[in-house]
Length: 335
Length: 144
Ligand code: SF4
Image 1: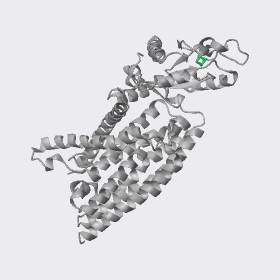
Image 2: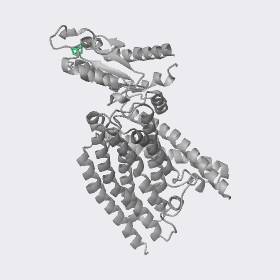
Image 3: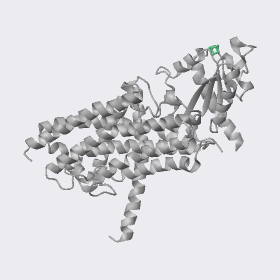
Image 4: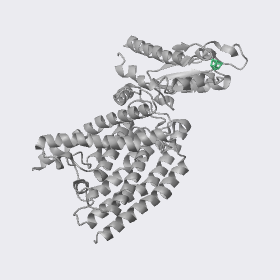
């Protein structure tokens, strides 16, 4: 491939993933709202409600507060959306391999995951409102809190794959191609289940959903980080939130549910891609239901100090237990 | 500019209490319970005036709240409508002609829709939101 072709492929892939991320993300936000409504015995909004909300926000006036720092205030939403889309470029979607990628992209994704959150923090501090400042501080604390369990869950899988003698274990493509469940024995499977649970509990914090939405707490902080945002900027954050939903779900799918339909049933290549894509969306739906809707409907918001102790003490401990089980499994398997 | 269809199906309300007796608040909360479920029309309560399309004002505007009400109104991004919920905000209601009022609401900020009752029923509040939405559409149509 010539350089031009490479660049064209990368640009085309990026645009395609951006469109996919936004459309699918908004759709799954709608699905989540519908699930929540059904669980509360309501009819709930139509599935396309997030699209309507985003379109409306785009039409609203865009207010920049007097004591904000305008270029940071306006830049943060763009950074949040762009970085969320960037992560998506490293994640496999069904049997469509990631646009970018290579050795160690799993570590890169872990770092990139913090950038949308940091963009929100920067935007919050730049908006010059005490509510946003408190929200930004809480977001930082939450960011630090959930990093440990998330890292344990991710590293444990990559480590187990490398112990099984698979080359390039820190690449998402490798992880998706070698389902970790096929590698481990029964002890490791228990460990993996624990780690899966941890990832399901990290997801709401990553997406600032109830019960870990202390940084946006509508009732105490009036929207927290986003309190000063309106119109187009707010819409961009809304889209970033949608893309982040897909990112977290796709990450969980790539790590824990990487099977493709085409590896079970023989299919023509074109059909296989489509079938895998639909199967991927079904898996995302599963993740959205269990780790976003179900948790958010069944719980109330935690206080910020409770969030820290939950992640550092309880989920951190659970993570180490899971990691230990995976290690014991590796020893039992004789490697 | 005709309002986009999106406004029809997505109205976010910010609730401002300018010194009400809390009767109207209880009815507003009743209006967002699963029984009435206004989310199916895209109506939801938001925490910040910057996110809102509708300002729900309850209470007769006591002296201390006048400045706050004006500031909250100015902070809302256009296009916006103001809904006055309850007899208090319309005329002073039970607090009519009281020494500590700067209201009613339309002495302080322009009001688009009045919802009557002391307190109004949830159905009336939801109806008020629908009327407010129609008014928003008409105002934007005239601007064009
Ligand atoms: S209208 Fe009636 S119920 Fe509503 S705030 Fe005034 S006194 Fe209370």
